Length: 477
Ligand SMILES: [Ca+2]
Ligand SMILES: [Ca+2]
Ligand SMILES: [Zn+2]
Ligand SMILES: [Zn+2]
Image (tube, rainbow, N blue to C red):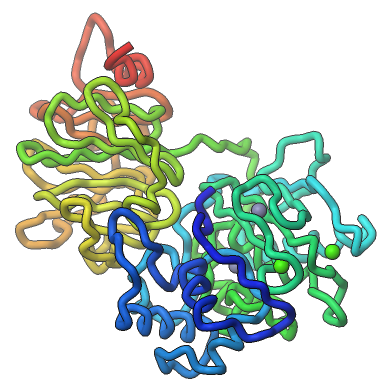
C-alpha cells in the first residue's frame, strides 16, 4: 500500500486555515506534485522544480497559475480534500486538462462491497443508503454493478470508518484536511473514511458522505484525480457538486464501457499480474506476468519482476537482497505495471495509457502509448521483441500488433488475431524472450514458441503448456 508517501508532515489544518510555507512543501510531496527525496533522484527541491510543483497543484486546484506560494495557494492547501495523491508519477504535468486513469481496473463488472465498520455520526441505515447512492452514480453511467454483501463474506471493496492510524500505514490526520482515501483496483479497491470528520447527509455542518464516497469509489474503480475542478474526481472537497461531471463519465466509460449488456456471470478473480523485464547488454528483451514471480535469467543483466506495486530484482538463485521494493521508490511511478520491454538499453514500463522509459535506472520520459506506437491500445497484456525479426509485438486480448522500430510505425495489416501464433491459447498474460527463445504465459501455464516453425514447440516428453511455477520458479530450490 504505497498510495501515499511514507515521509510526510501531517498538516494540522482545521477547516480551511492556510498552511505555512514549510507545510506547503510537505503538501506538494504528499500529493505527488513534488518528487519525494528518494535514492533514485536523491535531490532536494530546487527552486525551479518547486515552482513547477506549485504550478502543478494550482492547476488541480483551479487557481491562478503563478508558480508561487501566494495567499490563494496556501489557503487552498488548507482545504478539505481527498488523501490520495493528485499526480501519479512525477512528470505528466503536460497532459491535457481532464480526467486521469490510474492504470489498473477490475476484470469483472459486477463488484461487491461490504462495511468493515460504521460511523457513529449516522445511523447504519442512513450510511448504507448514502453509500448505495454513491455507487449508483457510477452504476448509472457505466457497465458496472455493485452489490453489498454481508461483512463475513469476501468483497471487492471494503468500506471502513476509522480515525488516525488504521492499519494501512497511512494514518488519518484528525478533523479537517484529509477526509478519506481509497485504493486503486490493483491495491484492492478499499475505501477508508476519516472518523474525525463529522459525516452528514446533505451539506450542512459537516462533510457530505455521499459526495466523498462517490469520489473515493472513483479511485476504487481505477480513476485518479482530475484537474477539471468541477469534476467529482477533482481532489479538493466541493460540497456544491451534485453528481458526476462529463469528465468523470468519460473516464469511467473509457475503462468499463457504457452500460451493462448482460449480467456478468464470471466470478471475481483477483489474480495479480506479474511482469518481468530483462536488461542486458547482449540480449535485449522482454516481459512476463502472471506466473507467480519467476524468471530465471542466466545472463549477466538484471531481470526485474513486477507484482502489484512491488518489484524484485532477480538473480540466478532468486531475488536479490533488499527486494521486493516499491516500484514507486525506485522507478518513481505509482501503481502497478501492465507489461515491460527493454529495447536497446531502454526499459519501458507500460501502465494504462502511458509508457515510462528508463535508461540505466534513470527516468527518460513518459509518453502516451499512442504517441509512441500509433494504433496500439492502452492497457496492453504483453509486449516483447521477437527473435524472428527484431520487431516488437504488442498483445491485448485476442489480438496482436507488430511494430517496426526502423520506421517507427505499426506494420500494415495489424492488428491480427492471436491465432496466427499456432498453438497458443486465446489470451496471453505475458511474453518473455530468454536465451533466444520466446515464451508465452497464460494463467499459470507457459508455452515455448518455435520461432522457425511459427508454432508452439513440440516436446514429446514434457509437452507444452507446462506449469510455470514448476519450471520457472524451480531455478533454485
Ligand atoms: Ca481529516
Ligand atoms: Ca465522526
Ligand atoms: Zn481522491
Ligand atoms: Zn486507510
